[in-house]
Length: 431
Image (tube, rainbow, N blue to C red):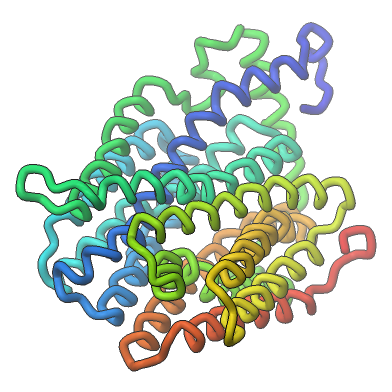
């Protein structure tokens, strides 16, 4: 936090750590549960498809329609956090997405599957952009960037933890319900519990924090107000003006194309591993957990090297292209499954390497106000990709295309996204 008249009376580094330890762990837990609840259909699919007779195309559309629902409240949700209450809005999200996620256990037809997935997207909409806004209520820019980078670790962590838990749940048969049904129930209800935790423990803004002293509350509010005033003085940028900037279009198209591969890879990974290995569901989820564990290591290394070198663009470009190359290598004919799994682990390293550097690019290439307008637009492109990539993958699988063709399609998406991003023009010190 920057200096201010009252900072001489405070241990500012200690205050920054105090805020981080109070705010960040709970938010990370929420994001872990959030991502698992949207992605656990990939684990359940190993048994759910056979039980309900769903085709690969049904799963592809059902997985993808989540992202259509997600778009509905993404921007309104962020505004509610800013103008109303993060505590109450996040609690509403947790309650609804927890019950809807658990309701997946009782779908019987494709239409019911589509509607529950769509409603899950609507229920969860606004959560990630809401977190970004919530961080602006507590952290100045340099601490905020570090917090967002740490938050990204929750994505592979949620899936690495979810894989072994899902493996155990798939094997149970309690109260006439199959294992895949218990998977949705057991993994969905923690969100409901966390809804009560958020109501009790989350603090909207520093001025309401009884765990801070009066001097600490005033200091944080003053510093954040000064930062906001400086951004306001730099001038506002309308959505129309933002859309006229080539940098925003390159960022939006780059992540849209890349995420067509990224989201589909995550949601179809257990199916891919099972088809390549020919092993049991439990072994499939064990290998899936290894894949996501490599992603955790990648996020940590990427954040450190990007900060140390000052490079963001080529970290993102290199991660995208490397992901595509490694994924394509996994389908070279004549390889053992061990060799293919090695390529997939390298793929995981690349797939999570680019994310954190990418999301710092708007603030490096644009003014502060332009970056704020651009981030929402770019994130909409990222979520549209979730629908397109998953629907396309399901269509390919239902029309007779095998793992080789599907993985090459995903690899092409990653490489095309990296090539698109390489045309982004930046100042020399930000390359």
